[in-house]
Length: 69
Image (tube, rainbow, N blue to C red; front, top):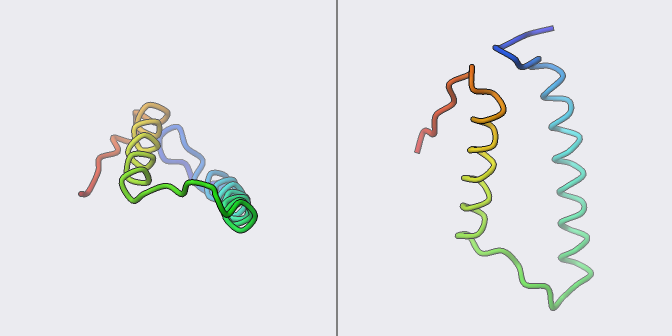
């Protein structure tokens, strides 16, 4: 397996693909079956991404993750 700091890259990619696929299907289901549902704005999505990135930095400090933009 390929290691980068504390992370097993192959295992992490496989787990993330599964989680992402599941979340995409849940999101689509919710949007398609709850027409009055308030959808996230682009600003909301940006905040979610920033929070998720911050979580990754805390989880894998040895990787020295930085934002490109």
